[in-house]
Amino acid sequence: MNKLTFTLLIVLSMLCACKQEPAKLWDSPDAYLGQTPPSDTPKVFAPGMLAEKGAWAGDRVAFSNDGKEFYYSQNTTWFDGKNLKVKYVKYVNGKWNKPQVLLAHYYGPTFSSDDKTMYFMGGPGKVPSVDVISQTHRTDTGWTVPTNYMRKPYRLYDFMPTTSGNIYAGSNGTSGTRDWQNCKFSRIDASKGDTAIKSLGVPLNSPGFNGDFFVAKDESYMIISAKEHPDFECELYISYHKPDDTWTNPKSLGPLINNGLAHRWGEYVSPDGKYLFYTHGHSEKDCFIFWVRFDTLFEKLKHTNFEPYVKNPVKDQVAKVDKSFSFQIPGDTFFDDDGNSTLTFSVGQLPAGLKFDATAKTITGKSVKAGKYEIEITATDTAKATVIAKLNVHVSK
Image 1: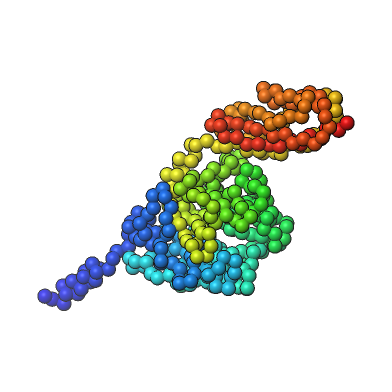
Image 2 (image 1 turned 180 degrees about the vertical axis):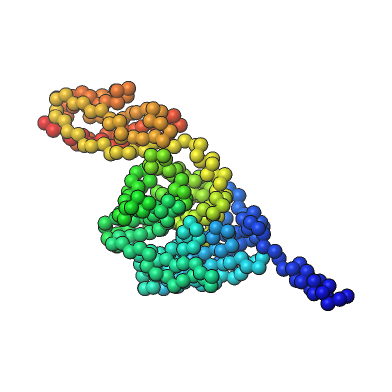
C-alpha cells in the first residue's frame, strides 16, 4: 500500500465516522433537538434537557431559520430577573450540544427575518426593564454585546418585528411603564414611517391585559393569550389578518391546548410552520415548554365558524314615561367575519310598554314606568354562536 492510498483510506474512515449534517435539518430526525414530534396533543418539549435543577425553561423560544440554533429563557421565579438568562443549543458536527448561557437578565429572544439580529426584553437590573428592547448582531465569532434598539415611555411587551418592517408588541400606549391592565395588542407601522404605537383595537383586544402573542413574519395571523384572568391564566386563540388591515374575531385553538385554567404564554411557531411552542404552567414548579402540531390545526381552523362580536358598544338612551320611544340597533354594533347577513337578533326583558321588532331591529313603544333599565341585545349566527350587547335606557317622568 503506497502512501497516497493510505492517506485516502484515513480520510475516508474519518468521514464515515463523522455524522454528516443533513442538507435540510427540518426534514431530518435530528430536527427540533432530536425530539420526537408531537401530534395534535401538546407535550413537553425536550423534558429534562433545557433547565437546570431548581429552574424552569420557557417564555418565548426562537429557532434560527435553518433550524440549527435554539434559544430560550431560563429562570427560577416568574417575576424576578435576578436569575433570568437566555440560553441556547446549537447543532454542530451532526449533533446538538449542551445548553449554554448567552446572556444574563434578558428574555424573550426574537430573530429578525434574516437571522442576523436578535432582539430581547429585560436587561441588567433587579427588575427587568419593561420599556426597552435590546438588540445583538450576529458575527463570525458569535453575537455582539447587547445595545438598546428601542426605548419608549410605555410598556413594550412581547416585541416582534415582521418582514414588512412593522413592529408588534403588547403595549399600554401612553399609560407609563407601571400599568399592566391597559396593555393592548399594538403595532408600530414602521414601514409607513410611523413611530407611535397604536392599539389594534377590537376584536383582538378585550378589557384587561393583552400582551402575550405571536405574529407571523408575513403578518398573516396572530396567536394570542386570550380570556385573561386577573392572575394571567388564559387560553390560546388565533386571529387572521384581513385584506382591509383588520383582524378576525380570535378563535380558540381547541380543547387539547386549552384544557383548563393555566398560564399560557410565549407563543411561537417554528420557521417551517409545523409546530406551535408555548409555555404552560400553574407555578414555577410545573412550568414547561410545550409543543404541538400546528400546520394542520391552522388550516382546519380557517374553515370553522367565526363567532360574532360587539364591534361598537351601544350608546345609552333616554326616554320619558308615556312618550313615544324608538331605537334601532346601529348597523355597526355587531360584526361577523362570516358575513353580517347571517345574524339574527333578540332582546332580553324590556320595560313595560316597549316591544322589539326583530326584522326592523327596533325597540319602540311608550314606557309606563320610570327607572333605569339594562336591555340585553343578542346577535346569533347560523352556527348558533351568540354575543350580547347591552343597551342602557333611562326612563324619566
